[in-house]
Image (cartoon, rainbow, N blue to C red; front, side, top):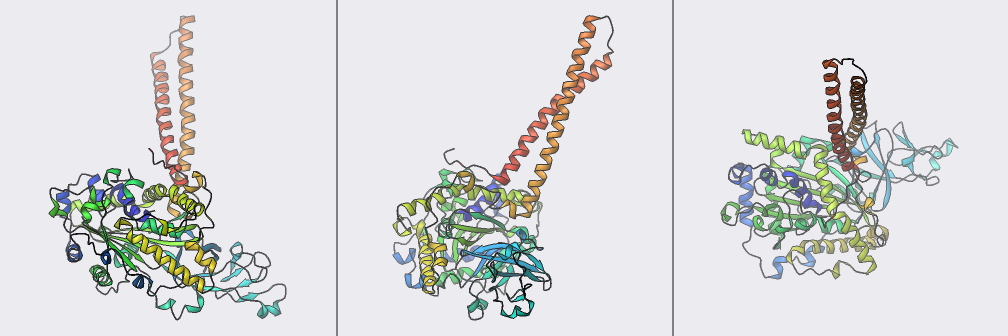
Length: 580
């Protein structure tokens, strides 16, 4: 699911993914005037990009591929990583919460004593009941089956059936956890926490950091997906599918699908490019991507930019650049310098074999800079209005839904045909990055198997859970994969449902008023025909007016109800038909 890109795109899609690109076009703010939005920090960024850009696609194989030796260097087994597991916004502090990563069921709870989230195996050591079905008691987890209690380190603190033998009870495995960007990150190999885990930094750039700090824990969009991280990662690193899989989203359309020359960056180029982060934090020590590619002449070829490119005035777009990076083991990042600086940041979590979770952030320079002009202020207001809250989530859904059907079925067909990514037909340079990603996963999975964790390796390369096409209602389900876990969307859904109930009541009342008025008019007419009794004009006028108002109100209310029904469905399920 180039979801990622698309997500950026998606958000741009509605008006502003790539920085302010889609946004500005959608609101007729003219290219020439928009170009003046550049600030000194942005200018330094594009100057850096210009120094790294290449005018043509090299025929040299080294320019489009990275050596297997370099790709394999330093790759860790899957369990020796900090994995993004769940947004804090989706958790309940007053009870245990079940979570999952690498196929392993875990439980997290908020320890009020030290005000931190804790993570344990979701399995009581007594008779293996899930601790997530229990409760939080004085900073401990109490199993719902027999009342055994475990502290945050996993040590058993109470055995009600024989208190004097609590020291004989086996502990439950605990895991190191950290909270950042509104997400809980879990180190899945307790034995190497000190030797490896504490030395690994999360790939969070200063622009993302500042955008998060200005927005809070609800800034992240999280959704579960009906296919594995191997297919998800391919999709997020694939820019070429955007015009086709996400046509009609924002500025995207099939006619933008054209050549996409792509070049892999060397280690030195990755190091040089990473210095853009110091424009937002002079003390930044960037985490380098495991692999990174650039789109050649991005203004003309990046689908997000291409709709705004003017071939008659190429100099205006000479410094527009697009870089796509993959950061081991879970992060895909699009960095664009165009009208403004923007990034699309996606983090992946392998829930289990054939199931994954994605976390999305769309970052724009404008989000963290103070508007200096009226135009800038309008841009920022529209940005927050169109992309903020559940509206932004609806755009993200359109992107993921656009890929959801065929990515799941891709996995099914690969299993049935006994195919792997090595059987793909990928003659275009546009596929070079995703092929490198799949080779990375193969190496990481093999190292995981060597550690005796075959089931963990299967969560990123296994095909056993594929095979049968799930119904569309399941593949495009928004409620269970996102809404129920999102405080913003749940609140808006509840408000929409309340509004629908009130509209239904109002419609019924208006229909009653209309019916009564019409009945009264018919009665007056009958009286006048059957007798000489005069009917006051004011009575006739008032009755006719009431009937008219009731009738008009009924139509208006019915229309509002249809609109509200559409809003409600947006939180539940919307079909996506590519043939349309």
